Image (cartoon, rainbow, N blue to C red; front, side, top):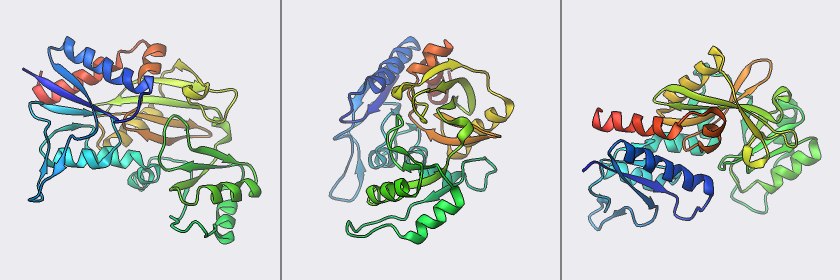
Length: 292
C-alpha cells in the first residue's frame, strides 16, 4: 500500500501546525495514499557502528513539517525522501542563511547586516558596529532574530537608544539588522509556491503593528501577483530547492523579498483565496513519488 509519513514537531500544539498535517493527510487519502502523522523524537539514531538508522520503515517518503535540522539530515542519510529536503529546510530556518544563499542571484531584498555571534554574557555590542548600522540603515531599523516564525522575534528600533537596548538584549541570540521599508509598514504579500509555481497569494495588512502577520492581527485578502513579484518568488524557491514554501514580499518603491518559510501555514491563505493548497501539495508529492 502507498504510505507517507508526516513528521511534525515533538512539542508544538499550535492549531495552525496541527491543521497543516491533518489537511495533508485528508488530501493524501483522497488520492488513495495512506498517511501517518508522527511527532519528532526517536525517529532516527546513530548506532554503535556509526551508521544512521531509522525505524521509519514502510513509508515511500516523508512530508517534513518540522525545522529540526538534525532529524531531517539523518532521515535523508537513512534513505528517506523528504518534502522539503534537508538542505532546503536548513537554508530557510535561519533567516540570515536564507539571504546569504540568495545573494548574487539578482533577487532584491532589504539591505541586511548580520549581527556578530556572541558567546560571552558579559560582553557588549560595540559602538563602532552600532554606528555602522545607524549610518547604513538609518531609523527606524528592523532587528530580527534569525530563528522564529509568526512574527515573533521581529523588533523595530526607532532611535539609537532602542537599537542599543535590542542589540544588548539579543547579543546571545543570532539576529540581523535590516532596512525598514516604510511604504510596506504593516503590509506585505504572502505567496505560496509549489513545485516551482506560484499557486496562491494574499495581501496581509495590519493597522496596529508594523508586522503584517495574521497571528498578530493582520487581515488577509486575495491578490493577483505582478509578473515581477511572481518571478521573485518562483526564482527564490528554485534557488533554495523548495518543493513547497511561503514567500513574503515587501512592496516599497520596488518589491523586495523579506522571508522564505519552508513550512508556511496555509489555513489562512486557503480561506481568503479559496485555493485548496493541501490538495495541490499532496498532488505534487504523489506526482513526484508515484508518477501519478
